[in-house]
Image (cartoon, rainbow, N blue to C red; front, side):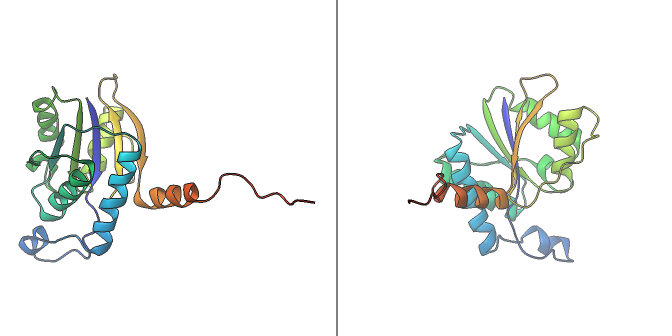
Length: 175
């Protein structure tokens, strides 16, 4: 399985009330991050046959926006293991449940998402990996130990798109 771990896109400021915070929607910048990251996945020829999301609105919206851009037409699965209170054993159970899938996009939250990523690739969680809002990591789970192939955040994606839009040939003066 190739696992794509994605942190939900920007949903503005955290609310003090947990019930209200769970219903927090993506802001305009977050929706733009989703479209940018989906285009990046498309340009990398990423194929997902399952999208799983945290039950919180901002993660579910992220999963749906990215899925739509990728042409994913199945229903987004919901897993509490990807929620802010999810733990690693529940996350492992979720991976086992979908182990017959080739490409899985899992959308969740920090801090548990980067902790899950660290434990996957080190076995003990010794890696501290920063995942900004909208970041996506590709982990090859068929390798032992699982291998982090890449980690792209929206800032990097914007820089890559800007550099590709310019000519790659240096300007030379003609004499």
